[in-house]
Length: 614
Image (cartoon, rainbow, N blue to C red; front, side, top):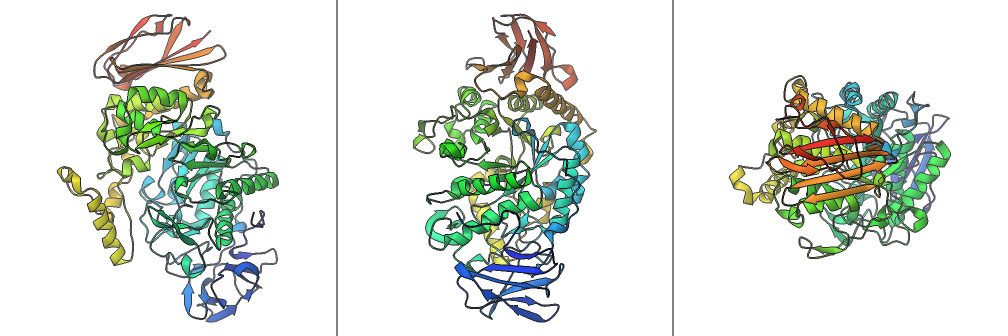
């Protein structure tokens, strides 16, 4: 492992207790490295140390100063470990003292992972203002909804002010248009006061194209592997030690200096590393050391498309130690069951049978032949607890990667939306909502960017059109560069007190409350579960229990009423939720009480939840 100071950020410019600036730049290619202070018209030479690091401790750099790194007296570049870019990705970096923030969350304890109810949001479109400060004003709303963990899409500095966040090029710098580093710290502090954990989406598998100056400093990329975004980040090729340190320090910074509770690591299957110690495993070991030092708890969640338990198995079992992963397959099976298209990767999913398998096995493909991949795929996740899997009916990818960015609210009936929400919330996994789904937001979530390089902007436009060339019947793909595309993706908060949106919101609040209150739902024991799909009826019975508490969930995905029989070995069922009831604008109510083996009519596209406290 690369030697790291767990307690402090070393890369870039930081300030010590004597208010001196400590500068530490990795540039093994350079013969000379200096810091330029344009406002003072001054240049400070750095001393060469070991392993390509250049350094100096000086009183000449103060918090708030703008600076650039000068390589070989020729190239001026932003600091790769810059904490602030007030003039954008091409402009000078700004020295800030990230440790000067006055935290008020000393009594905060992270929410236990098994209790997480996640809510994914994008800072720029979550509120009209698109800032951290505006998001803070919505925390009471989120608290009343019942979520206890917000997952913020990436905030690393990207070009312009409109971007999903996956085009970030300065991982240590918090997007200036959102409110910068202090704005994020203030938001996290406020979340903790409300009892809400903060998950930050981080991108360690690629860098964006505009403002990416890393190759001027060192071998950050390798030609050994290709990724969908070009050459892979260099985690195992010559010169990789500095790259591994760079990203590990970044992760530790978010936890230590921003009090982030968990990270969601983007598409880790695209991280290429054949080192004896995989970078994710190394990061986990460092995070464990940090937690010992601070007493705080942090989780590492991964987006993973490999169905490989090695990523989420504990370190002591030679796994990478990741705490949880997104499970796209649950989403895919649910979408197909709900009547969605079966093109692309959805072609692998049969619907109801695969949804039943997702409930029991987490992975749908765990050693079977995958037609879409044309190979046997996956491994069984037999010993991984339910808290290691995050499921959803929609997320930024599944919505935004559609040409017109349609949410479930535009693709499914009001009744089916309620059924899909219920199907997620009663699973033995961690449920996640995508912003706005809780009140059936009709606005799309489109793909948008604001590149300042005209050639790159045009290339993105053409690429988006080419990607959907076969979909002309739906019209043209919206221009990702247009400000209107971004504005069209913003949530409409004025809908909350209008029907049917207000009804859907109350429905979600009820679902989340039941999830928390009923032990059979809140305890994520994957072995205390029975599932019974019926292809002919298009119904699914999910029975979960904890000690003497039982819940049975009757789901009807068909467009006709269906007769479903309750389990024969449990008596005295009481209805706790019926999505078809008139209070949820449904067609009809079901009996409040039912007994063992009783036949119950389940309305079309609806879910009934019965509870029993034996």
